Length: 514
Image 1: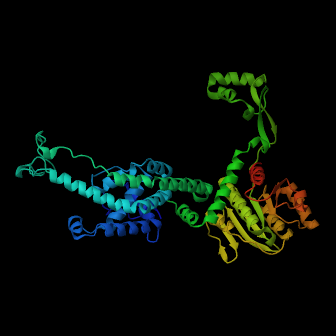
Image 2: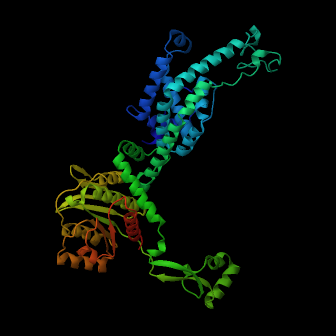
């Protein structure tokens, strides 16, 4: 939904801290019926009702518990998301301040700041954790403020705010009398020892929430540009957060996907890149891009340009020594996933994490992505290209999907049936004929044969269209026909094996370099 077309609800009251309009918009978008925030608001309002339901309390403070709970939750969200200003001293301010004094609470704020989805979750967790303490803190604050009010002697009739014509909102312009005890500052609200102990006892739980939020933040980051989050308004990211919270299996696979990407990024590029500069400086003309930056800077003005040209003519410029070929742009990544029954649950999990990692890498690198699942037939097809996003498999058929839907689709694949290589390889080559410099990655645990005609087609595609073929052999599978014509082979077992993850990351690095 477009922010500028959204009718902001400005009717919310302010209890202690004021959200920005954008912060209010973000909260309202995340507190619809059925969300974790909505559930937390209802639970808090019920506790306040039960704790402060006497006729005396209701006559003094009214019956606004659900509204108060909603406003308080929005302010907790606002404090997590951004530094919202304190605008009024009230019983609710005392509640906020008492909880925020905990160092663990400050650490939680730091971990979710400027992240609307995680701030909403942190607010919900906080209300659930402290709902009983919030109600009792309200009691303590009300009692304190009543006692403070009783200490103040009544003001003279002409000394009430608004009586002075020159000051409709306050006392006389001459200021209060120094002898007037009613104008002395009140003692700040002090939380009782029992309440402080109760709050501190839950510090461990806050630490657990903080750890969970940090873990979830890193897990979501693994999706890369799949859920481009613009100022916290992106609905895809919010939906992904819900799925990860409710689905531990999906969360595990996203963690593995993130670990694969992190491993890949940690590998030195010079082991895979066909174009690199050695850390040796030589003298000579070469290409302009070979020159050291200090040489290139000579072209900054007319005087030093003459020096540049003089050195160029005399071949005396300093340059990096290069080796390899010029780097060229890569074509699409075409993933062929073995979904036969022999892949089993653990191997399918690894394949799903790898497939999702490659989909996000291709999207981040602005390369097309295709995947074909297979056993004795094609079991699914996905695509993320400039033309759009789509996936077909089981009962799901869509050509107007979102990239993140492809990732979650790939992470929920099953397995069954036998193994046949010719058909998926032919589908991969169909793409390669149209989109040059493609990379086919075959992930399989089998050793099925390939017909001679397909082998010859692969060789032809490699020569004419720049096709590269990589093979991932799972679970100790023997070297097969595909691996013999591959540009790289990775031998892996499962996601819990570090050497397997490194093998996968190395192959990912190769496919991302040209």
